[in-house]
Length: 147
Image (tube, rainbow, N blue to C red):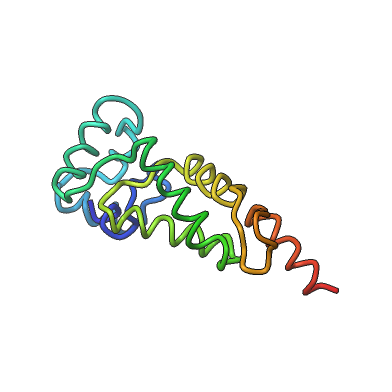
């Protein structure tokens, strides 16, 4: 639960958990830390545990509509002004958490980011009626800076 509180998502596997945390919890529940290796990271049990944690924390799973709304928000609000992919990703994940939505898998987050960056947007320096994607404008700006 603490990983979810700190990261805003569930760990993909035991390798994402700090060994000190594994050892601490193992001592609390009086089982060997190696028992974590037997935990099923796929299937009904983990889905049930995740549902319990989401309910306890007031979160819900992301839907396709949530993903589309997040891509639209990124395309309209952040992509035109933010050039750094890591900051875009961090802002997206923070928005999911702020709306009490569990972020989707990493591959879905990347798809949302790509969709937002490729969405047509207009800029103040563009002629009326023209549009380009944030990614295209960003690469143009990078080329101007480099020259």
